[in-house]
Each structure stands twice: as structure tokens, then as C-alpha cells.
Image (tube, rainbow, N blue to C red; front, side, top):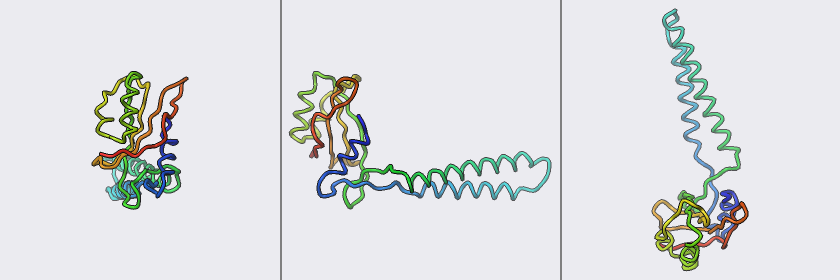
Amino acid sequence: MDKTLFCEALYALPDNIIVKRRKSVVKPVVAIAVGAFIVASGYSLPEGPSTANWHSGLLLLGAIVAIGGFVSLLVRLFGSEGQPCLGEAGEALKITELSFARMQIRDVMSAIDSGDMDALLAVPTSQVAAVTVALCRTSDGKFAVCQPFEYIELEYRPLRDVKILKR
């Protein structure tokens, strides 16, 4: 299943039910600040043969943390990746995949067609993913959107369009 195509189908739902939000930049900024603090603390060590290794180690560690935070910040600001969120409220949605055996396709499709998420979650899952359901839902499970895929000829093909489920 291609997560990018599934997310594009989610963003195409009417009335902007699901919108794309960028991830927070707080963690990268904190990483840059921590890296700068480690570098500054490395420079604050007194000079001497007993602290030379500590000085170099703190400078290296601080530089790695700060550069990692800077790269992460650039990816979050200018990258194309985002997180699906529920409408204007901005509640983050989590994408999971449910795998089912081929013999359970009728139960899976009837649960999706009826729009019942509890019935879908009650169907036993399988290690062999002949049928996969991409499920995007809130943390409390009150809102969910899914799309079933079937594994045919070395690729996952959608069985239905994206469907909103109720609980």
C-alpha cells in the first residue's frame, strides 16, 4: 500500500475534513539550543591537559546535536511531508494498516460498506496481507477513515474509495 496515495485521497475528501499540517518545529529548535549549550559548556572548561579530551568531546557532541537539529528543522520547514489532521481543529490522525486473509474479504468489505469501525476491528487479522485496510483515525477513535486494498500481481490495488467510518 502506498501511504502517499492514501494521504492524497484523504486530503481530497470534501469540505476539508482532513487537512495536511506540518509537524512542529519545537523539537528541532530545542535540539539546536541543546547543541549550542553543549558547545558553550565545552568552551567554558578550564584549559589543561586533563580537560583537553573533555573539551574536544563536548565540542564534537554539541556540533552533532546542533547540526542534526538544523537538518531536522530544514526538513520540517521545506520538506513535502506533513501529518494528516482532522479539519480546522487540527487533531492529529494516526495511520495504521490492518492485514486480513483472503477468505475474510467478505467480512471486511461488509464492515466497510456499513461504515462500522467496531465490526471492522472485530474481524481477525492475519500475518499474510492478502487484503489490507489503511485506517486513519483519531486517538480516541471517534473519527476514522479507511480504504481497503487487495494484493494482486505484486501490488496493492484499491477495492473501494476512501470511506468514513462511525463508531
